[in-house]
Image (tube, rainbow, N blue to C red; front, side):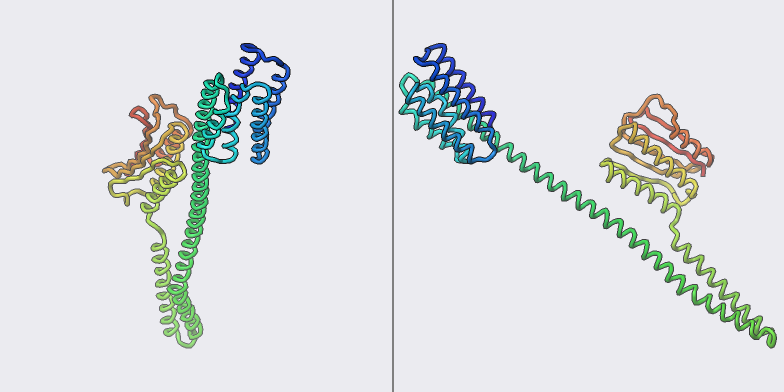
Length: 368
């Protein structure tokens, strides 16, 4: 707002200097020049201060000085008053109507020959004042909205970090609970069986010399109990271990979710056919090739969306990673693509890269 006021006063200052010293020279130019310089110093000092009280005092002193100069030297000094009155109203935080009333209040004391110029200067000054004030209000509103948006962003970021920490703690707690469950199950199902087998073997050793038949029976019981315990261990571990197909497709979905969250891009996973037939080695190749293909899409393709699809066909397992990036007509085989081909070849498969159909796609074919 200070620049608006300075520009308004500068225009009036140039006009007054032109009239006073060139069009109708004053009787005593030196006094007029001194008065203009004092007026210039007072008005230039107002924007220097940051606090409102010194600004208001300087604005009042400047207005009083202009009135004194208009009464003592030349009424043309009244042309500076509209800008000073508008500035005083602004510093007093009054409504724009007060500026218009203050400008009109000076009009009856203005000489008739100066009234057109005073009305024009007053109108332009009031127009600039109202426009500047409206702009200032809009700017303050935008700053307030920006501050609110910044606070909301900080709050959401803090909430997101808290959620990530909560998820990390929850994941760790789930792991501890699962370990505790397996430990308790082994203790309940297997510990008692092993203790019973040990008791049977100790009893067999004690009666081995006096009653071989009884010792043989006890030893047979111990062997049966041990076999049953080992079977329970096998079943417990089998139940705890996830299926390879569940682990494989889950890792791809986890990869897609991480891309969507971290990169703010659309990542999807789909599969068709019986994925139970995919071996752990094939899942490993599919996942490693998918990671490499996604890395290339993010690094070179400028993609905003990635789709991963697993298809189980009659004789092949087909894994496709495609994006909506820029693509490429000619593909130069780098270390990443060569590595994908080598991984697929180790299982008797192949890799096909295509960038001609809009975006880029990497297809891994593995025999069943």
